[in-house]
Amino acid sequence: MSTTATPIAIGPAATPLLTRAVADGGATVADLDRARALIWNSGPDDFPQELPAGIEWVQLFSAGVEDWFSRNVFQRFPGVVFTSAAGAYSHSVAEHALAMLLAGVRHLPQQTQARSWRQSEFFPHIGTLRGATIAIVGAGGIGRELIALLEPFGARIIAVTRSGTPIVAPGVVETLPAERLPEVWSRTDHVVVGAPATAATRHLIGKEELAQLKPTSWVINIARGSLIDTDALVVALRDGTIGGAGLDVTDPEPLPDGHPLWELPNAVVTPHDSNPPQLRAGAYAAHVANNVARFVAGDELEARIDVTAGY
Amino acid sequence: MSTTATPIAIGPAATPLLTRAVADGGATVADLDRARALIWNSGPDDFPQELPAGIEWVQLFSAGVEDWFSRNVFQRFPGVVFTSAAGAYSHSVAEHALAMLLAGVRHLPQQTQARSWRQSEFFPHIGTLRGATIAIVGAGGIGRELIALLEPFGARIIAVTRSGTPIVAPGVVETLPAERLPEVWSRTDHVVVGAPATAATRHLIGKEELAQLKPTSWVINIARGSLIDTDALVVALRDGTIGGAGLDVTDPEPLPDGHPLWELPNAVVTPHDSNPPQLRAGAYAAHVANNVARFVAGDELEARIDVTAGY
Image (cartoon, rainbow over all chains, first blue to last red; front, side, top):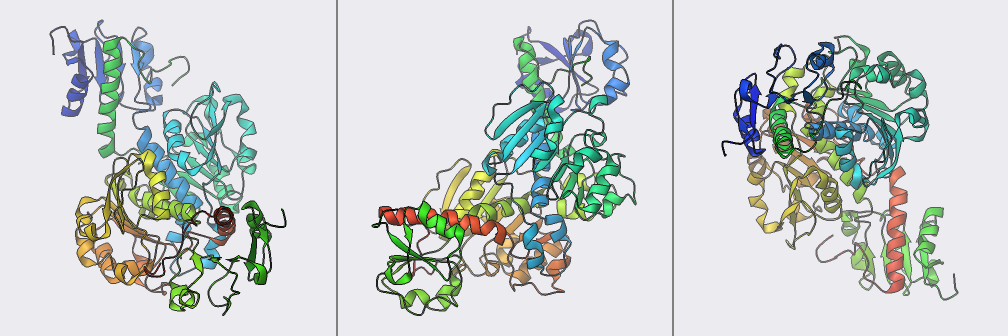
């Protein structure tokens, strides 16, 4: 590495994986005082109160950054570009979403709890993703990974994004802007929610939306619990007006003992573990290496936080 | 349809789907006495004791044909070509295999049975198919469909076929002939068994093979129960020397009440429902239309039964 290599700091403490990622991106690890960027490997609570004037860019470890907004971190550093790790953990989370969706469609939660051979009873409940219509609401990094995983099923994807700019990928039959979301519910077989948690997306799925889904529809949430009205969901699951729900996130979270979702046979709850630590460090390092290379080259950084939009 | 269209019979009774499939294939439905082929929509028990001399080809409804062999049906008609429905139901069965494998790797069976938020306990058990090595033993029609479904995961497939003729598909890193199967167990992360049930494949996975797998390995059987030594599997699942098993077929089958497999938290048993009737009729009709078109054109038929090999 030449002495002119871009100096980048790692905080609160360097790890071998991140040190290698900075080098892989073509930069060199430096102290914060002489660095042009900071790779932050922790949450907002121990983030520096002040940053040296030389810091142009801060890379955060988390994919969702509500906690950083609520602590007014970005507002304190108006001249600094912040990037999240949105996209870095996309594969693991998309894989989890597909696991829950496929398990649901194949009636595995109920079958796993059987203690006898109930073939004729289960037969009619076995569905397929082959040719199914799947709405991906909030088709960001995770949604795009999921679209790739669904492609060989021949599923028909309705993608919903804020802008509605068409997502060009095999299987995507339509991309709708957020304001056309009300059209989606009656047209889809299943729904995967991947939107960020903002005031506008709170209870994006409630009683009215659930009522338009099919008795075989599965609703998968791998984003944030607040996107779904939990009470309305419990009613729909209990009454069987939808097929089931796969929830890696809940509202409230953690889901308290005794909550009805724990007992419902058509609810699969996983405790926000779709992006487990042992898979995370490697994925974050790959994201860092990629963004460092972009920073060094002067290219646009991935997952830049839009302070005005709130994510 | 011209009067010279190939006459094909449907038995024991025509259905609208099969009638349309014969027409879609370019042939015409005829009585058995004047037909050149017979599309059989039932099992071996009500199959005709004799066939008119004009019958050149019989299409069977089942993908596995042990029952037909044990009743000596093929031997009674040495001049007739029989085709099975092998491949027709591949997608549904491959989808089921992936559903069980993904559920296992994502620890869903155990998570589904939790009644409290056990994040730190579950975290270390969440695996990924990303870059995983997966052995597909008996990579026929179902195996090939499964290879396609696994492609976007970036999984590394070791395919095992009788001949070892290389399967050229994205993700397949190696195709081994059956006699090199002993090399596979210690090299793979997971195993999917899709081989036909013959004397040579009985207990293809037993104590010795299971002992070479990893504590995180899932074994998926969507073929025939006899391929796995059930008693050895129960021991491996109980001791945790493998991660788990997803079984759509069992030995004995049906699995009797009280069998230890029902209670093991790392066993997912589905009662041979990976190819349910409501998905089957459409898939069989598509297979028939394809084979009828081949018959009319004089092309090689798909899924021709090899009477000498026994499948």
